[in-house]
Length: 217
Image (cartoon, rainbow, N blue to C red; front, side, top):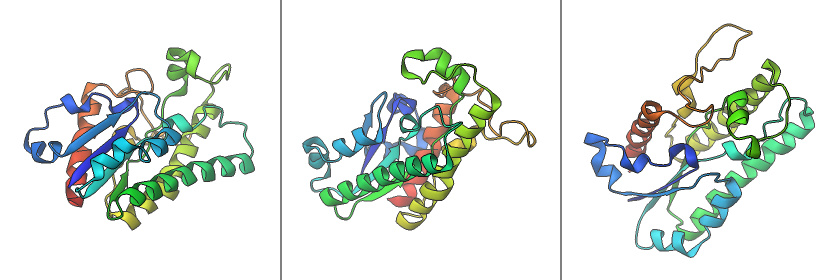
């Protein structure tokens, strides 16, 4: 079985990580890691000729670690109706990707990793040209963003994987913590800029990914 590994910039460069005993599955992986990748970009890629060529004469497992670039930073202050519309739009895009994959390879399996949230203040400071103009970032901004990401992870991604492969890849748990009711449940010190993992976290994520994907092969 061939593994098609699709990710945004958070997992760029993972092909250079030495995973030792997991080398057998690593040799099966074809990487498509693109900075700034959004769900619409993934949908176009899985409908492309290059993706179709990868699927020819191969059973295919498609791994997705995307979605953070589709979640706007100005979640705080949006109405419940607006959030529901945004949630349904994101879920629809994931489902369209699955449909497109299985149109090309009807027996393909799709696994979606959970979306780790990001630290808004550091991310906006580092990438102001890519960020919403939110002014001063407050606890409410961060909490609202994390709550929306958690909704996607818990209400959609968990259920999707349970129905599709029964394999769950909870990347967000690597920096989840419990600090009481008023503090964030996440510690972002393992993210070098509020968004991207440092070397140790990236290796930890990749080890988790390949060990879970082995269950699908």
